[in-house]
Image 1 (spheres, helix red, strand yellow):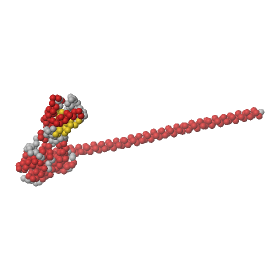
Image 2 (tube, one colour; image 1 turned 180 degrees about the vertical axis):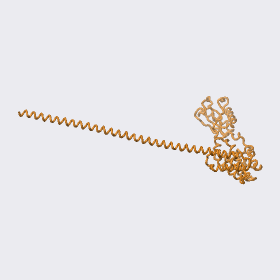
Image 3 (tube, one colour; image 1 turned 45 degrees about the horizontal axis):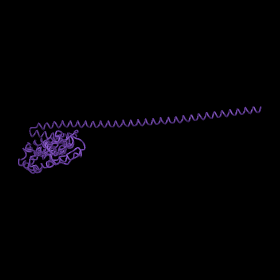
Image 4 (cartoon, helix red, strand yellow; image 1 turned 60 degrees about the vertical axis):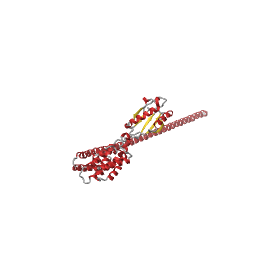
Length: 382
């Protein structure tokens, strides 16, 4: 009985131990599963938080972009409103000035001119014309010149001095643009510009009758381009105001003085103003340089060739000039080049070409673009 009891006790103990081991294993597995789930939940929570943070940042950036766009829209609206205001002010100014200018043009008596001049002067004062730029340089010069005319033809006691003050304002404005105009188109605007300077001579003569020195000093303040223009045949004497106000002896003195100071004993013609002196020679390659040197030698003595430049590409050959007045001279240069080449010259391919849109360039130069003597000319215009 004792042995049997011992066996039963052993089995019971072993069973208890097995139950304990199984319980411990289940607990360990449960703990591991819980830990894994906790890690997963933490990672998921972290991802959700990061996504929320990214969404918040994106929404914040979108809000910032929307604010910037709104600011830009407000700025554009402000600029558009300002532009509209300027356009409205300009339109109003043009309307007012047009009315006052029409009164000047319709005036027939000194009294009419006085009233029209005072009205126009008042409008210009309200516009603060000098430096405002509301009407544009050219318009402002014209209006000031019209004001000077009205003042000069009025019965104001100080009409000459007032006219001189107005025309000097016009000249100051005009001088700011004269250089630009003559660079863009050397003779464009000279006839127009000339008018205000001739008006000034009229007013000077009226203010200082018979004083040749005063008149000459006034002329010497004119820009060089205007002095050259005044040398044109009959320009000074043909102006009604100058002819009626200035003594003939004074006009002769002015013409003599202008001729001496501008180095022109005779009245210059347009052809003389555009006389070609400098020639720039171009060839397509270094191998064609001897052709350029041959042409340079042929032109030297008649003109002033400025050397030979290698372009390094093909081009359409010819004599390129900038002003219509240079056409006959360009043809003469082409003839000299053809003579220098002799029978080998590809005359049909070599043209004289007027370049449009280059009127800001000097009036005394042209370009010669030579084909290589050993090859037929080819290529597209440059």
